[in-house]
Image 1 (cartoon, protein in one colour):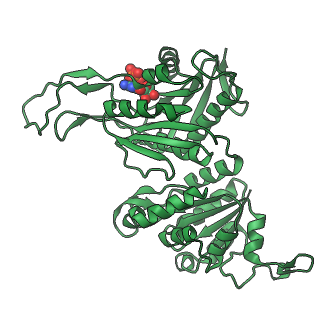
Image 2: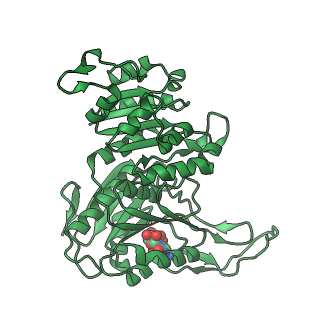
Image 3: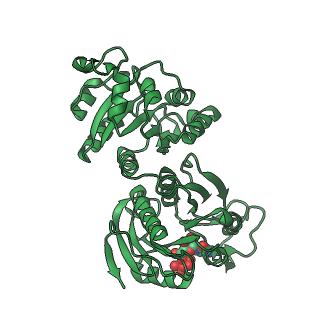
Length: 425
Ligand code: CTP
């Protein structure tokens, strides 16, 4: 893959040096273009050494002077030529200013001119102060870019260069590289699908300030939403208690309790052609939560009652052709529990994941587990949630393509050959 990597002026430019290395490690050719401000943070020499190519920094200095004039085709303009050679344009970090520049179509330097001339897919990895990120102007520019099919790798939360803590930290180089290769290798294979995804953990109030909850961060569901958007699907994301930025371009609804989640899922179900219940739904709620804050006492007994199983209701209420995927968060007997839930919940697919350790499952950036369906099972080795999301969607897409009449009583198709079957029968 030939990648054009645009680097804008932000502290996160140093992470793009690592990104350059990672993209090359995975076999890509990387041509770096730096803005004038980027050169204030990292020197072109660093990128030249890591990419193995001279860095482009100005509209007025063709890198290869010997190809500047092509008699057969006229004057060879560098910022046009590079866009014709590349498969993908990645902007990392994309500053608030550069995002505005792209949204409004300005072309007053090399990188912005390349963006306007580019016909290939574009991925941006924003990085900025959290107030700049959440400003309506930036958010509206991002929506504009998303509508033009620019892919956005959402920033993470954490300590920012300005000392603030919040959203706006550029995604990690590995995450951006996953996104780049996913996009480079796939077409819009999920175009036409509307995928309803639930994410995060529901919270059931005990009183006005306390709740019963779980450790789900929502990262898996959000990774699925980003991956599905990148593959052309329309996404309805319903999230409970998450603190991570919402992928730009999805219809997003926020809920708190299992009962609110149930209501929203059932309301949105008619619009969906696929449902992925990645949310960790509380199995219990407090029977009579106090409306005010309870005063501390030596001991407290809570009466809990079961919440409705939303997944089962989805299976019963879905239209023919709507594929339903459940998750099973397990600490032991992952395969057996996955098989039991597949059977008992009547879903098309279960993703059973291991939440026992600290390096996979809840709160972690990685996950591992197994995908189960009626005709077989596929092991998912430990990988980033983003990459696992890709595998889950590959499989779901395979089911959609190969099933005769997808629906409740049709045996599901075999796994696409790109996956590793560990069992079939
Ligand atoms: N789920 C749901 N409604 C609930 C509980 C779970 O829709 N009230 C969904 C989850 O979103 C997940 C699947 O059911 O997709 C399995 O959730 P899990 O907690 O693993 O299973 P449970 O049925 O709750 O069984 P257990 O907690 O005993 O393992």
